[in-house]
Length: 326
Image (cartoon, rainbow, N blue to C red; front, top):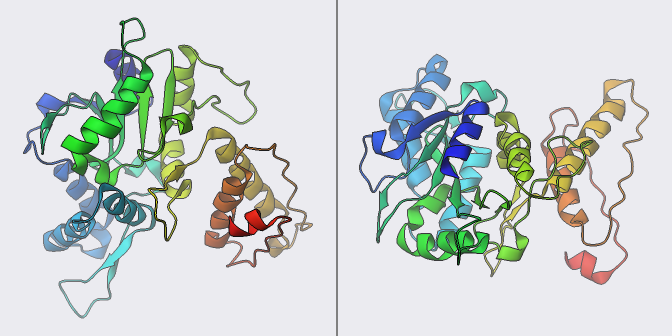
């Protein structure tokens, strides 16, 4: 299984490194050389100093204390939105730091690492980790489909029970996790129940759905882990509520991703702002239980952040009280 995923990540242009080949403190979960290298190159024109790079990394790591969920919520928001740091030269304005270049995927460092030893409360060796600019965004756990007494759900338990207990720092920066036995390949939020893990069944929106089997491994790799697609999901398709008493973190399913993307592109294309549009953004029909509310949430967020639309007014119309609460 690991070998298959190594080959598939290589096909997507990721650098592959075996965990034992990385010189580091086994307590570290960030590849600091990669992160420093990315920040140094990205902000070279701004004259970023080594101390300022350290300050940016310290700001990311300052999500100490609280639960794993609280730390992850804070760190993922920093990864998604960026943050400002003060300059060593106090006469200069604050420098805004983006830990990932979402606009230019090729400017980022993508690495797939297996057998990456982490020693915190206990020594654990995750099967695979995807690092972007040294940040461990995705953790993968594999089980064998032919081995007796092991299932893909055992991989879920390994991540969410044993790894959470023994190496919680790894999940401070986690966008989502993947569980696989080769035949079954699913992804989801680290904090979601097992039944909320799903297969990514399409590479493009107009493809036929892949139901499962080994083909679902290729569909996930080409449809979710293509570099620009992975960054898009991390940037726009993770929802963390402002306030919650539960560990709520939602990662889009593939129908929500494609619906949101198509709607957003259609709205921009028909917008009257450019002087040529007819203002007819389109209509979306979704079946009961397909996740329409989250699709609309992801769409509203993209509309609000759109430079072309310049902070549009968004009107929500509902027909039931429970939808008002939602």
